[in-house]
Length: 159
Image 1 (spheres, one colour):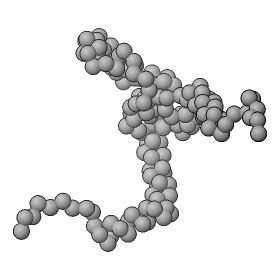
Image 2 (cartoon, one colour):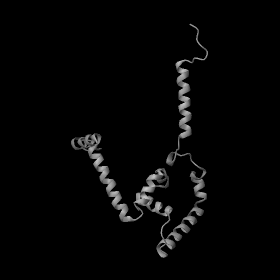
Image 3 (cartoon, helix red, strand yellow):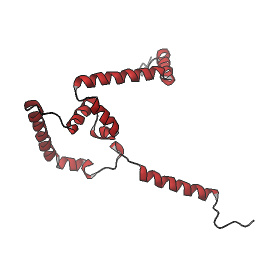
Image 4 (spheres, helix red, strand yellow):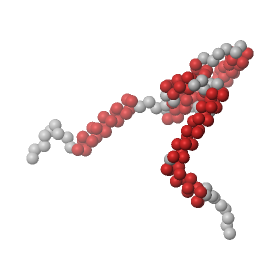
């Protein structure tokens, strides 16, 4: 039985398939947030050096925010609306950037930058989450465990 030179062994075929899959994943992967590649500005020493500039920039932004929206009562731009929504959600910039655009558009349609609308929306989301948890068999199992065994306790009783 003579082996055809074009034919590869199973391990070689598997390695080739793995390399193709790895290459496709590397091309399609979009890492954002805390797992993104760090930039020069993420280094602590660089942040300390540019902190006076950052502080002045923040003060300018804050004063302009008060001037435009508190004193002059100008309407919010789309970016400012998203900022307010992000603050209501208590998310960081990277977390909020990871949210898909169609979801952000939905937030804008529901006018979540208005505090009352956000509270109503948040309450609805909490109720939906509680309902989903109540139907989850895993969560029911966890609640039964806590009911029967209690929360794990750490004691220092030497008696």
